[in-house]
Image (cartoon, rainbow, N blue to C red; front, side):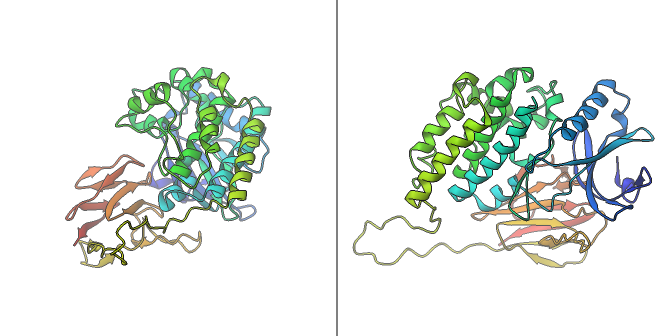
Length: 408
């Protein structure tokens, strides 16, 4: 798959108008249905893999799984088939962002909002549970939030077939390692709905705490912690949360499945109890609250140190773009699709959503969003969704547009 696919029409009906995401198995495009003018998402299996009988069976199984799952919290499938050895699945186009986007841009979420999101994920998994389906790859990147604040679970069934993923595939596995259950890390075949609920609990932990329950330098480090380390306390990260949230996490993140919530409905009931407690206590976090001043003679907060201003300079033209905000999308605007990135680079080699630039308390980072023409930092191609720290003078390349990062 390459950029030549844009503009192509599949089965004389679905016109590819943009690339939404790319993985080792398939590419997702935004398409327009020429019969009814509707916009859909279309997943296409990589052509070079279509001759692999096992992978093809897995791709087709995903289509069958989605056809049998009808739930408002699961992305719907409308069509699937084969066009000249090009296997595709046509799904809902979700007008919104991934949960990962909101977690990165907002940090610790309001408790009731985070629990509501986790509840919606569990509701979608309840439908899957009743159909005997295990997702096996619940993580913020696979959770979409539409314009009505409704959760949509995507990539259903794909992870179910990826039993061959191992810890040696660090680039592929790293994103999943933060959210994987101990038994799934040992053997993907042993995963069941309790494994999915474990992953939901890790996502909820990160929404509330601002970081996953377990972190490490490699996927192996993280998985070992999932298997062996005690469940950390959320209340130590968020003093506004009731102690019952730690009790919930102790059960939801138990090392053995038998000690966890057995079904999505049990999980949901526990979440509802916590939501009721939080509502009664009025525990919405105050992110602007300052710690008490223990010096009675000091009545004013200390003057903060001067902050440096960041910007990027387009090398070919010298045009300066100040970097304002905590999360900025670098891309190419498309009014037809309603895409307006904060940093608009009007060049066809730049994806509509090419990369993120983040400001985390004065530290700037870049993350490639699986762009077709990739993002490069000082000549090195970035691994998709790997966050890299920027320093003054770094050279970034988005498609064929080269810029210099300045922090002064």
